Image (tube, rainbow, N blue to C red; front, side, top):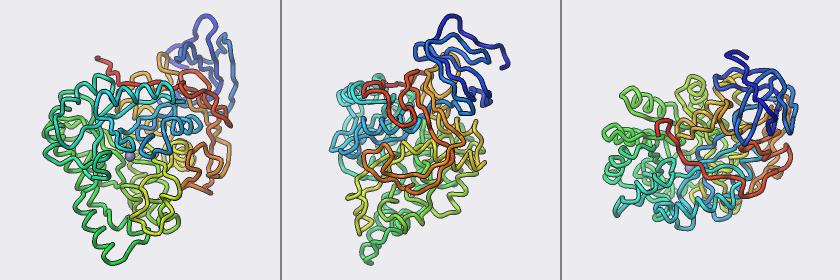
Length: 461
Ligand SMILES: [Zn+2]
């Protein structure tokens, strides 16, 4: 270890031995990580005095994953418990939850925000941060109070999926809200698909009797995403709002982000693991089980995203975990199937297997995309890195393990996965949340209620 060994004095709660990824992206092989009071207190080559010790030679000790895009309550059958339990089993130690709660309870008032924050304290296995939202009409007086309560950002949609829960926000309203959010300083995100383009193409498809799965991708073409992204970035440009671009599926979406950044805009942008692992051909194979919004894309776009991952044009990778039961997915008419895939549990290891193990991204970049990137984007100052003072949120991977995704063995409420049968290299064998063992390689080992609410902290705040 350079820059001085940091060895704590006196016994610490926990000492872990393994290959530890440092904050600067260097992999320190065969070192000791010391944890005390739920925080990381040191990394060094000497074994510290510790109340508990675990040797994990040749295992990767990595920062716990922050999945910055999950929907715990978009389906009434899921919930905070199910999502965060699956998160713990997958190496995800913090999730950022969307505000579009079913049946008709968007998190747009301080009362709803506080109620959800309280529910985290009872139901969550891992830490949870929250987006808030605002309605399409009426006063915007709740924006500041929601930010004061600890909202990590505001999330809306320019494509209406549900008139109350997930409504379309008109452009004039976006402009007004972005002006106020610019003063508040937290990011604003908007599901970006052009409603007129998609609605017209679906109407044509339905009129022609075309309901087959591939029509989901055909009726939501690339221009629907890039037009809406450009519109949001322009509104951000002229208001100064800090913007977070969710689930970009096309290299061009990230080209627009780069242009906005070059013009001085503060922006972060994510893709989701399904846009890297699946292409639109999955719709033919899996039908409604491959339906998500935006849709899976042509192979050329998938390859383009991989090259953007390593060179830094994509800031983070999320799951957009949105699980629906199979009776809402396996339907004949693709337009009647629910959009959304389960994925919080498989996000880390599938990105590891397909990205790091295959040499498409390096380990330092992997940790940026899944841990330090989301922490920085949303101001989680104590999360996302292995360094003294940070929360001891850790994911341990056995890089030599080989296994095959078997959907019935996953810790999911819905019992299916779009990655069924996929061969995986590497396996998550331990998860620690603030120093507590949350997953031991077979079972989730903390109770509901271990998870805590996480709000943004700015270094200057
Ligand atoms: Zn989503």
